[in-house]
Picture 1: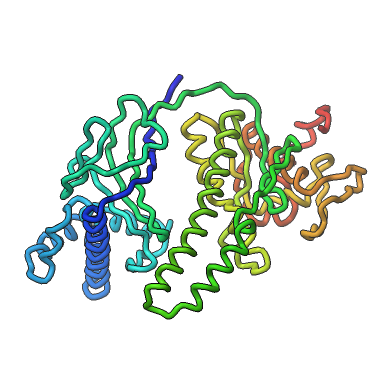
Picture 2 (picture 1 turned 180 degrees about the vertical axis):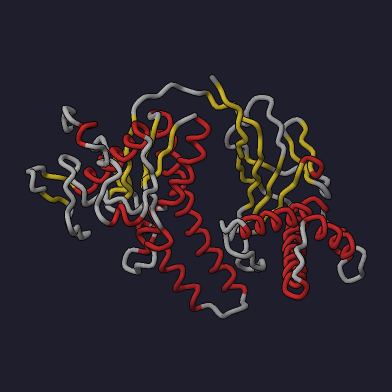
Length: 401
């Protein structure tokens, strides 16, 4: 069996001077249009209690282009500007649904530089890509081939803080549905990045720690440079390149891990971690950010959907660490310094392996008897495990593993 999915293929490219100037001008116009539309929508609501949708902001954009002050908006392709308005509309939809905060204004220094082109704003011919308002195709480094017969439906051009240019092509890709069996529970940690219920521990590579001295040296050099000088710009790019190297290595490692897990296992059980709250611990914030647990979960989610796997998320209040996987007894306290502990029943547990096995047990309870993977806080805080809620009659005669 096979499944057709939308998949983005990202490549690096090297623009000419004219192309770089055109793209930078496009980024600036996108940022301006987005901020003006956001201001118009904010003022309409605060003054008249009126909601402005995408169609109204699109009409405003047409009027802005006809003014003398904003006539330069006609020098770039209109499609990225319209896409910026659509992105603003999606941001408001997420805000109204309470999935995100209120949209904020884009900054020239802090916001991501990107432009999205739909099919009407680029030409794809014989493996070459030419964007609107450009005479020459982009010089793309094809590090991997596109799917056979694939034609991009959307193209996104971006430039990171290190000055590297990337183009992302959204195409239809066929994912082969390979058979898989088994179920695995995963406990995320810092000493070991992942601990599986099978007992396997995946080492945390600590990419940021490996380049910490190099990064600190570059940041000290940046701090000594005079603000606004050319040397400060060079030092800033040097720092950004080190950050980009760390992020690239971390992303590559997570891609390999998630692809392996999804291809080998039919059902994966993970824990719902509140990373935003955990990084408030300033002693562990750097290590937690370097582990990238949220990025790991995001990759698992879309890859599980690609390959037809089941991804079960256990509630964050489930006491997986303090619960004995042998008898179900709940320990009162379990400080981080305790890596091994002995249950009154006599079982000796490795902290992480025990947690992974309990997470797997919770996932089995979900698939077997429809237990809720997100129990109420009171249930978890009182120590009643979602994997131990069967009645004695239902479990009578079943051996404890």
